[in-house]
Length: 186
Image (cartoon, rainbow, N blue to C red; front, side, top):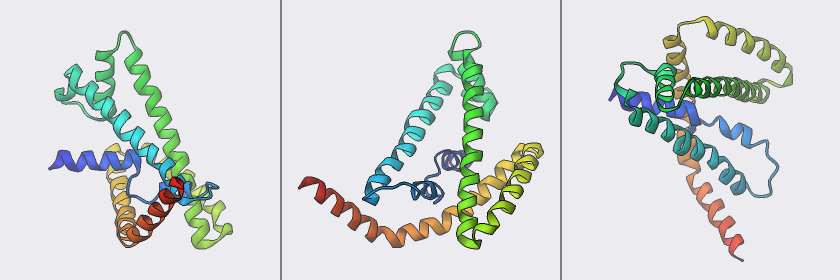
């Protein structure tokens, strides 16, 4: 049960499916039909889950490092090091971590900024930016387990109302998608 919980938590953290945060960025796109942006946004989840996460899982299994007692980035680094010659494995994982961390910080900053702007107006954006930078610094020095637990908690708090909203919007999504593909066939 813990394995499934951790897998779901890290998967949601990785691809943001169901959180309702990625649509904030998607909403900035200029498109004639919302369905086209939804199809583009789906590629993020596909690439992350089926390509990156599956490849990482396969490397863990094929190299036999999955049962080494390690976890997280350390386990992934050891697996890629075992599977690739020289230091390539370490470099690939290190570069991936840097890019993942940087893009996560940028994305969450943008999502938070747009949310604060919507809720409190443009005047609240600058204080939010300062507060965000402070929390990034604080998060960098806290214990990793606490940071992950906090991220999981906030992701759950975001996912719940978003998933309820998606349930209520299912008829709208169905109608828009059906109409879009009906137009495409003409």
